[in-house]
Image (cartoon, rainbow, N blue to C red):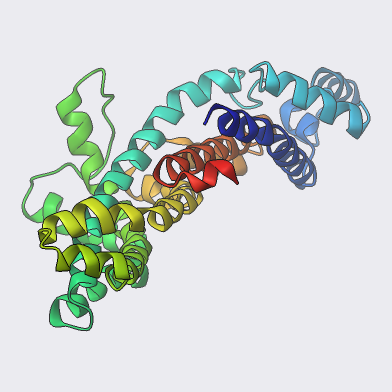
Length: 315
């Protein structure tokens, strides 16, 4: 297991280098001149623009700037925001907990929805329960996040007054309010994530329930709870865990929309703000950190899959 972990950790290095190269090239190709924007626009003096260009390192060759970008990022230095003069790392430290809280709670909601629906659908294939489960799961794909979020706000915030519609409270400040403020956004995102997970779990568990080892265990008198919960479900969780890991980029991408609807101060809203203010340093930092989250999630998914299925460690 240790060698498997070391191999996967070493594989993260080229992945992050390629991601850094893509982020750097794409943000460098964006229209506009950061030095001119920092100097106050086209009306600024050439001397002031040249001063900012040198200060921002824009006068260096592209290769040198990429090398500096990678070295600085590796040491935790993501530069200074053009618009606020604040270190990008400090901005991320404020925004990341919000998005991470939303994504983690969303996956918890997705599991709470997908596990019972997937198991019920697999136990009663083509029955009424199967069709109802698939209909609920499919609604997560068919209904857009922003529309489902508006429905939740109309019902639980404006009509019933049970949950806040917007805003965010830190977990260190008030854990109860933190949970209440994130509940509707997490249900919105988790409902969408549960759809594919339910379908995958239904297919995987249904396949295992038709295998010979399940028939053998049932024939020797093992209880249905033991056959399904202890043996078949555990074997079926491998593909479901992979599906869960593949949904991390989708969750982070969808969080941009959900944060905008519920006015959450996460990295999604920060990314949108950086695009409109042409704050390249913040944009690079946010995207690179988002890629890092996805890569780490992929590593944890492989780790969980290896724990469930020992054959993966050998491969």
